[in-house]
Length: 556
Ligand SMILES: Nc1ncnc2c1ncn2[C@@H]1O[C@H](COP(=O)(O)OP(=O)(O)OP(=O)(O)O)[C@@H](O)[C@H]1O
Ligand SMILES: [Mg+2]
Image 1 (cartoon, protein in one colour):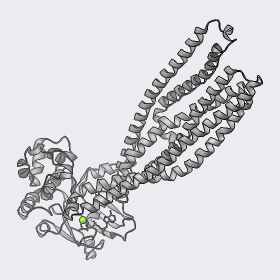
Image 2 (tube, rainbow, N blue to C red):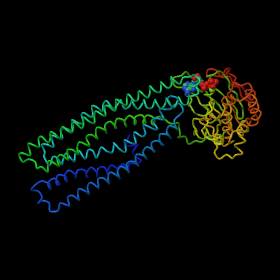
Image 3 (tube, protein in one colour):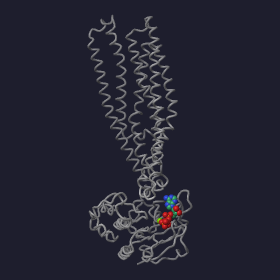
């Protein structure tokens, strides 16, 4: 799994690992050279080195090469980490975007955001840093051990015994770090979600004067993170000095024993220098292993969450079949649909709408009116029954070919933080200014747009906050009309229009709507007049459903 994520930059990662290994190998040469150097200074050894400068130069070269390797390595791996994080983010974003809306209805938005930000960086950092470090760490430990064995087997074995002791300590602490790391991550996600939601809900918070409570809620969340983080830090903090203490004790022990051996001629002083330097070389990776363990646990948590999201089934993309140019005949045949854990929102719905018909659907709140539109757009899939457009089962054609031919003004208008122009042209970015203005005129939006400070180039704020509710709705309508779709779903699209504006719109639209099939979801009497037929929906079924069976008369 982890390797699958690393595949795109495996070349760089392998190069980085190679550099690390080379650097570790060089590091192993330093104690040996140190020992030789010691010989220079000890009485009686001078004769052995006719050209001491070679030794100094070699040592300098090794140190310089080490520094250079480190520099290249850090640059290479840093670039790999950035690339990995970027690729992961793009892949995850595309996946999230392809998921059905139902996925997001079951979760908080903050969860997805935390995945994209925090979890992705944990994983990329781990892959390009800690995970690669393991080979050089092991190489250093093993190499140092072999060199030590050659110098003095007894002392080396003693040092080797201490290593399992280290790892045992690491494991014990690590076992406690893992659930803590996961919990900490979840709390981070909750804090992001809370802030995100509250800032979006600010008008409600202010109107209900709930600032102190919300502030308190956020503070508690942050305090919880601080508490957990402190616990995690204490564990890590304990691990470092404990490792150091053990390492220090080992050195003292070695010195102690060496003292006895030296006395009996078992170990030359220069060998002891090499030995201690190797010992020191070994303690660094062991401490590194402690870190590695904690980081592995963190990365595993992040990876688990990422894998979970990536395993979610995206909307079907496989269908090759294209929806032919739509004439506009719609048929729901025995369609049942329920949201997860809810009673059915639509129950065996049978519905036939002729091409070019304008059908109004009314009914109490929660009757399932909006759900009809969503199913037609395949934002959700029916659990039973099928939906046909021009006799084609819409479940068998590509989503793109279907959705591109259906226009919709949703009940809750969603606009982008962009200019008026860009919002209207969202569905047809190549539309000319003339076409945009024509759509705006039809939606009765042109006049108010001209009254805005920069006209069509005015920025409208997040979700259109700088516009009135009715103005937002008119923009959404213009956006849908510009698409010139053969099927148009208007879900309370004029609910916020003033009566005058609505009347004008309906007058204007009579011609416009006649050329397409329109699903008019509305309670407004003025809009109902526009319809060829009015259907009553109640509890997910049509009232007087028998009537539906009669052949309809197309509007032409
Ligand atoms: N995302 C969702 N998850 C679970 N249940 C939902 C979801 N959206 C809607 N519902 C439920 O499905 C039923 C039908 O909802 P729908 O939005 O179609 O009603 P409606 O007729 O459009 O109502 P309104 O007149 O208020 O717009 C309702 O009982 C509602 O509670
Ligand atoms: Mg609705």
